Amino acid sequence: MLGQLGDEAKLLAGGQSLIPLMKLRFANPRHLVDLNFVAGTSYIQEDNGAVKFGALTRHSEIENSPISQRFPILHDCAAGIADVQIRNRGTIGGSLAEADPSGDWATVLLTQKTDIRCLSPRQERTVPLSDFITDAYSTVLEHDELVREIVVKRPDKGSGGAYLAFKRSAPVYPTVSAAVQLTMKEDVCQHASIVLGCVGLVPVRAQEADEALRGRKIDDKVIATAMDAVRTAVDPQPDMRGSAEYKRTLAAALVKRAISIAMLRARGERVEVSHIYA
Ligand SMILES: Cc1cc2nc3c(=O)[nH]c(=O)nc-3n(C[C@H](O)[C@H](O)[C@H](O)COP(=O)(O)OP(=O)(O)OC[C@H]3O[C@@H](n4cnc5c(N)ncnc54)[C@H](O)[C@@H]3O)c2cc1C
Image (cartoon, rainbow, N blue to C red; front, side, top):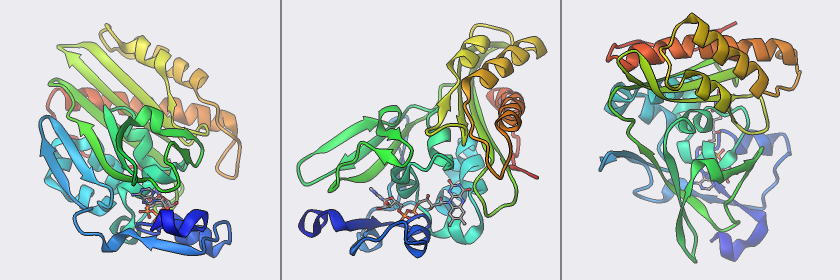
């Protein structure tokens, strides 16, 4: 249908980004192709060490799924998106396709090995999430291509992750967010992945902060070095939510908290996480 209707047609999933943009007249598609009527597009499956999400899987379905208990960073993300009405409608596929710099899913899933399965009349292709988002609100998707499935590899044994956002209130996007995934062997960090949201045009990987943790026993000094690296990695824009310096400080503080939660989870401890509200 997208091929037939041409450039003036847009896909509609949960409508939680597109409909507000249409109300504001920032988007004005002549046609909407509603994916909600396509059977078999909403599912959560575990297969061969990976979790697969159909593109139309709602945030609330992930929040309430048993997989969230075993893969808690997914619960941190899904349960913290806006309010229950938005979580009941909004989809993981729509969120990644929208590539909003303030969206939660891309920040979290970039700490994992995540592939996006895309489908068009010509081909089916698998794109790593790290290549999928090209800029703010931009992806590699062609006009008649859609997100079909999101595949997230289960983390290694001894691994734990955490996602925290700082928000002014529940139904708004975060001011800053931080996702951390650690693989630990005894007290030593084998692998670290730190990604920050809302502090650049796309989620920001803090690779120097990863390096600061890797191969080290994580103590206050090591965490302080990682926090310095986070402050340097981010490039936040000042806006009504705060100055650039405020957001830089916030990013480092969220990473510090997320590291301590990820370490506990890597040890197998159960830690409930909720976003921080101003
Ligand atoms: C008040 C409010 C607060 C919000 N707060 C947050 C928040 O804190 N964190 C957060 O992450 N999000 C937040 N959201 C956004 C919400 O998570 C959306 O659900 C999400 O961004 C888009 O998903 P959707 O399914 O609603 O997509 P839609 O709005 O239906 O579509 C969004 C875009 O993606 C395209 N699209 C949709 N599905 C596909 C697909 N399968 N393949 C290709 N293209 C597709 C559409 O054509 C459109 O361009 C908020 C929304 C509102 C209204």
